[in-house]
Length: 293
Length: 264
Image 1 (cartoon, chains in turn purple, cyan):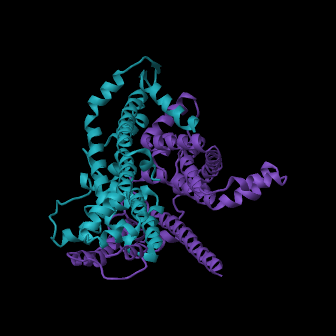
Image 2 (cartoon, helix red, strand yellow):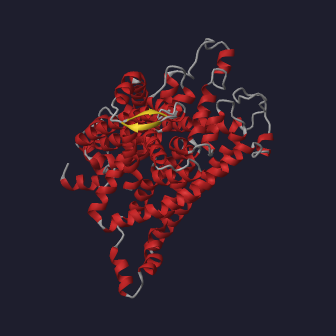
Image 3 (cartoon, one colour):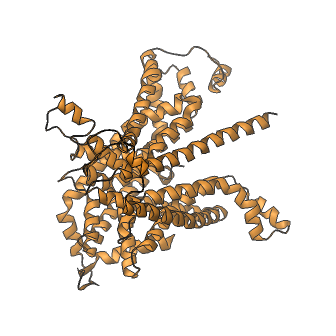
């Protein structure tokens, strides 16, 4: 085999026979077994979601929703029938919205600062991120609880929001920073040379460029806050969020309304992310067509 | 950032050295007894955490690698659809997902109930309330943290290298063993870390899926704080746990480097 052939082959453009001495069984494995296996993994991943949705239709009469006892729509007709649950869902939505908003602003500021003052900011952010992972949720929850106790902050809605801001900031900073890779600082300088104030520069130049990253980060932060159980359980006092209420209800039996609300949340998240993905691939195709012209 | 992270850790450290009780107040006394008592009384729960968390990490890796490999190399234009499909279940609150596993695996649940009434399984057969259920639940909960870094490192591999190896008469298995697996190791290391740490610390899976005698250390810390109100003891337990994780992480970093932990 000569050099040119090798180079052409490594570019992946040329189809030609390859060395296949003992590879045919492996080939079959890759073509048939692996896709089947991947779909099995997907089945495994969706199994509890299916159970959740199906048991939302279960005509259960006891406290435990485990044995199937007939199909009913009554839980779906009355998703807010359990007052304490509805209140917990409301608390969750409110605290996650506030928490995600604050951490998006702060996290974006950290990302911008670490991008501008490249070297020091980056290593610092990396170090804190690694420590945050290493500390784990139980330790962070415990640490925040001791801090709130030492500072005499009453536990409740306020401490939940503070805790949520704390644990979601690193994720926001990382997500926005990923968007900033390749961001050209001279664009901001050009705007300022043309007489724009720092605020105008930010709203007219910086923000539009990083906006997709900021939006993704905000949604991620919201999802993290909404879903958090461990850290929130340490700092919540007597306030109940949705995951806390559900967890507490496991002792007495979880009402089917939990399945219904869970299904709604799943559908909302799925719809949102699927439409995001569709819009993005549509835009990419659009861009490809434009650049081809 | 420092305010949000280091200050709480510092107060945790101070709290762990205090003595006293909830009703008479706590005082700082360099009380290292909290540490020795914590380690000697709860060593079994620390071991459970390492055992189940470690097993779950291995299960997640073994399950995730072939799927990530297939998506990265053979799914073609449907790659991102598959990734999205894998992430979709995680939109459901993790407490509810774990509860659903509890329903699915319950002794009289939809999986084992019918099998038992058909006498295909012995009546005392159970998965729920065993270490198997805890390990499976942990592997499920943190699955994306394993799959995504492994996928990312497989996806980055230059296809030219694979073709070059084939041109040099390596068969497909040799290509996998000597090119693809070594090049995907950074992703595997990142995945092991990102799955292992939360899996070792988690107590929700153990509480909802495990039975008596499977308690992990995270649960002990939580109970000591919220039910026993023995803050110094709980803080000492949490601190030992954190130091253990930090030591593991530093060791890891010395061997593999930070970039690989951060995944970029």
